[in-house]
Length: 88
Image (cartoon, rainbow, N blue to C red):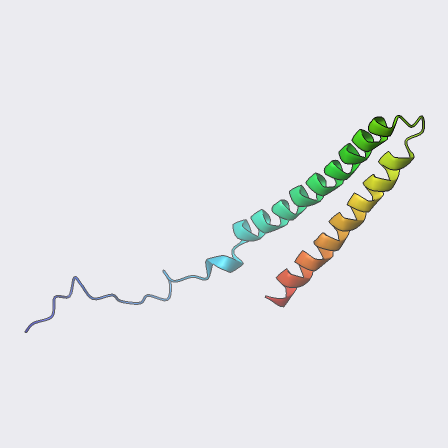
């Protein structure tokens, strides 16, 4: 039996690049982290404003407090994700 050379899978090191380390992929990873931070902080302040309005408080104490909690969660998530990226 003769082997058909068209069916052979040849491994070419130039075509098998590690696409996980490309610049465009890193740009996507870091920009997604930024959007996650913005969403977390935005939801924190928005939720704080809604709760503040629900209770009818004159001052914006709940808005600021819950917003800062959202910022803390966003920065915690940022550090955790950057640590995971660094370990890879």
